[in-house]
Amino acid sequence: MFVRIGNTPRDYAWGSTTAIAHLLGTTPSGAPEAELWLGAHPGSPSRILDPAEAGGAADLAHWSETAGKLPYLLKVLAAAGPLSLQAHPSSAQARAGFERENAEGLAPGSPERNYKDPFHKPEMIFALSDPFDALCGFREPADSRAALERLAGGDPAVAAFAATLDGDPQQALRHATEWLLGGAPEVAAVVDAVVEAARTAEGVDADTVRMLAEAFPGDPGIVLALLLNRVALRPGDALYLPAGNIHAYLRGLGVELMAASDNVLRGGLTPKRIDVPELVSILDFAPFAVTPMVRERPAPGVEEFVPDVPDFRLARVEVGGDVPSTTVELPGTAIALCTAGDVELRGATGSVRLARGEAAVVTADEGTLTVYAGAGTLFLATPNR
Image 1 (spheres, rainbow, N blue to C red):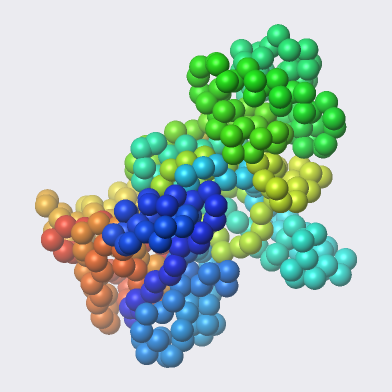
Image 2 (cartoon, helix red, strand yellow):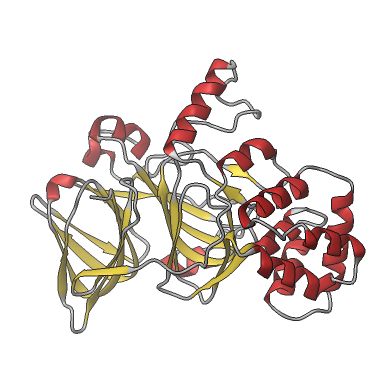
């Protein structure tokens, strides 16, 4: 079954006013257009353009009650400014936290809740812009100490904080995170000194500080960001963000795919509540070097990005020229989004043609999809095998 869907971009303040419209060939609304959601998530379920195709259901949230739960959410994300620092729990952490908060009597919509559901929320981002800038995971504490000393090592408060990054890497990063987010009055002096030094300094770290200080003046996340890897993705690169990974998208346009969960624990760069003990309990403090995801090429014109979770995988399909058609296996119900040209999808029981900016749900009974057209680009989200 092929069911055409659509949605209205969410107008979060950090969103670009033009990027999603330019990608999909739509008319800009004039307001920020931060995220276009394609899925059944109740926060913004996709509209079914012809309810008769889906038994009268008006949106995917209602249709999926009978057609089967979608374990993922596909988004087009356009960040004109930085998002909050955040991390997501593992399945075990989410389940335990959700049950604990239920037992405590917290209402489903309570602002004191950390866990809105019992599910994990790994995610990945496929970069469309050049560059797509992000913060991702902790870097080696020695590198962070060197960055702090280059920027503002002559300031006593900064020097004292930098010295705490010696010793066992994970313990040092945990202590530094707790201290920065813990509300001690001395934190402000470190933030102020780093921001002041970055005004005239050069390099990536200074650029990060200036960007974050402009968006979130005085926020301790400005300094916490210097403990993280700064990543510049190029178009076609994909980054995977597993449970426990602290991250923030800084600027850029991309296709994001994640498990369908609301569980977010924030770590700065936000006016929203930060539960420091709970955040620290789920964070992975092991330093690592960030590398883009490995791409698989199962068929001509097809690139697949396959994480280590069952909830989702992403395929990018290009047809035209030397590849007039290709095939893609469906391990489950898929969401297809055309971002350039036009494509035709044919399955076991039917077909659909999508032009730039159009999307559709494809149920698993279509089996192997054949994709062809004059020239076009398609993103296809499915469950993982």
